[in-house]
Image (cartoon, rainbow, N blue to C red):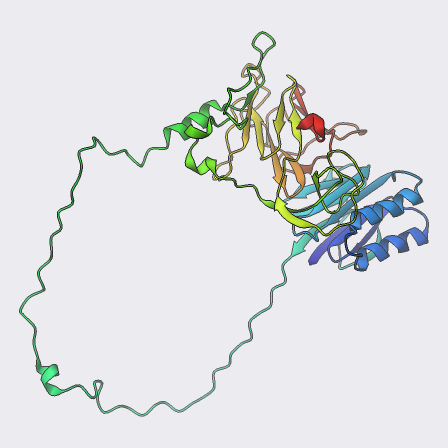
Length: 396
């Protein structure tokens, strides 16, 4: 794995090599820096994860959680992220932005410098995986003499065959009469699927309602996906499209990321084991003000009139907010799943969105930027409706 890094000088320490990058508050101890460098630069023992070993080093050095820590591990192909304290990880397309300033405005950051790997003083770093491309060897044509002209273009065919002629005119066309059954007018394929239009315009998964009109649970057989019973579900929505991830299992059988030091559901210690590729499980849920939980088995769009992104082949959960609040946009907030990461993005909404990770002050999200959510993070849309990202048994 080749990762292109660009960092801005700062008071923290950036330690990186290959697929493993760590940005943390300065431990003021060269032995701690050396231990972390050994973890990220050397091959880890079978079953061990870089994140777990780094956490063990920094927790011992700081006698608990460090003031700031941000880590990205690209080993699994889809990045695994980890943050503590003021550490922050933000997504910008394929780029992962690590900082220990709780995601401060990048406009005030010093110019970035390139880094292949090593240890430098930094406060921010942008990481982008780069595919290794090998150019095909150039084949140089060898000079050769042109071939001698042939005596004739056609050789070896008897003169009687060359002189033969076929019947005059083209061969007759066999007319095939198509049998058309009288089934009424054919559908106009230029028009969109009425069911698709109805789903986009109405939405059915979750609606935030006033207390006078509480939410009614879906009927049996709806499968909780807001699409309807399996017998009436469109064929293109009936097939599983869940991506796969590398995972390990805790003592209770919960699937969790290989880089996590403990289970993401029950927080039990995960024994060293070889990761295996499985279908990605639900990554938790979004707790709505009504108490409902939207499962994060796929993406979520929230707004007054949410709809899937243009050109999207996925079908996200659509969460309808009351239409009488104009500061909430029609498509206000999007929550996406990227590997094991849950990512939030403000869709250039009118009223904006604030993000408040646990233990930190709320900050306004930059429109279009992607933010990796930690369990317990609160997203407040236009200071009117707040949802909370939860994991564990409460979100199941």
